[in-house]
Length: 101
Image (cartoon, rainbow, N blue to C red):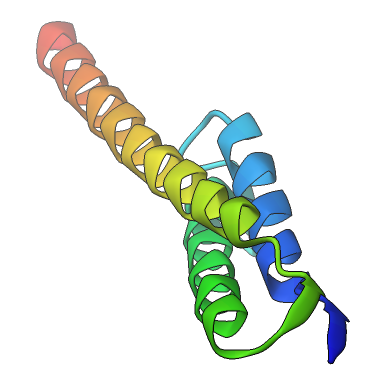
C-alpha cells in the first residue's frame, strides 16, 4: 500500500499557482509569448484527474480524493478566467488600434 497520492497533491498545487498568475500571457521565451498560467492550469487539471483516477484504483493511506477534485475545479476555473481575460485584452487592443487611426 502506498502512503500518499502525490499526483493529486501536485495537481492541486499547480492549479493554485496557475490561478494566482493573472495575465494570460506572462513571459516571453526568445521572443515567443508563453501562456504560463494556462499551461499550469492545464497541467494542474490533468495531474488532478490522474490523481483522482489513481485514488479510485489503488489504496492509499492519504488518497487526497477531495484534493484532486478541488484541483480539477480550480484548474478549470483558472483556464476559463485566463481565456476570458485574454479575449478582453484582445478586444481592448483592437479597439485601441481602431481609435488611433
